[in-house]
Image 1 (cartoon, helix red, strand yellow):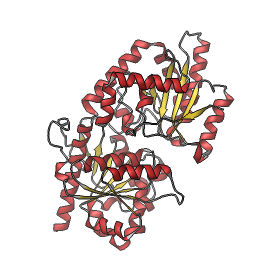
Image 2: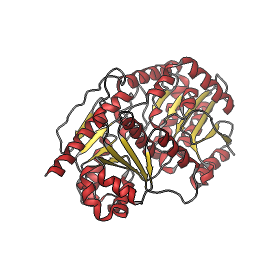
Image 3: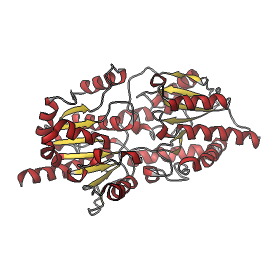
Length: 445
């Protein structure tokens, strides 16, 4: 079997938006992050409207300061260490930072006690976010009273009918629906039948927005509401770590030692909750192929390792067992390491040399709006067709040290120019102003 999972005990950091932060020490092949251009673009039925990047938070009033004392209800389909819920938590903390009253509802919880849910709920409570029961009267009352309701992911749409029932029409005009999914099984009328009637939808990339517009029209026969494309950014806390050379060196050495990776070895990582849609299986196949290419070409390279951050053997998923069986079958146990799910990914970003992202296809979705191919990273095709190109990219970056380091520096420069917290705050502020204005106009009519 592959090496045992490794845990890291430290103060929790934000993870989904962290992928670009450590590019000064790790080089991007391709990844899918909720961030991109210097704008919040209103698409489809709206004229393109640019939003300035704005000044760093702390040097000027927050662009979200108009949300002070407003009541916002955030509705998530789950509370886990996966993208959607963590993004919504980011929004909760931004709003709490300007004095917004924020309430949180998780629509689906396991019947048994869950340590991750317990930890994340207390993280929110510590920041002043009120956590409500998903189907209690308090949730209904809050939804009716709120200035804004944010539904997170397509799946959350079922909560409207199940909990709000006859009150749904009163709430829809103040709903902002934040959609992240691109996979086909989310296009169900049960989930999104109310989508045309909400104040607006917020989507993470232009490609995803166009995909949703086309699929809802063609498959479901419904029309998207006014849609805002918003690319997010990295937290101040993570940037502080990225700027601290001593902290990065200490984290790098500690993680490598815990994994059994030497200082001179090359470490490639994929950071995502282990699941079939995230591409860990394709990554491992590419990594194995890259080892074969190196052997066939008789290249003299440092020993190579792959680390998969996001493991959860307690879930006993068939997919994770398949991954570990593949590693065992190919006899690459000494090269592959599985690390448990964690909010604290900064140590692993510091430890690695190359970050790989395969989620929902790589040279697709929002990735193509973020990666400057050949400059800040290398893209490879979607799905099985991308296995060999990714393997070749792995070998290419392992072989050309200077190119790898140069890409990392350019990627980090791009982060600081476009993907910081104050950039994100400006983009989201523009959307919330529009949605609040529409909601008020509806209530006044």
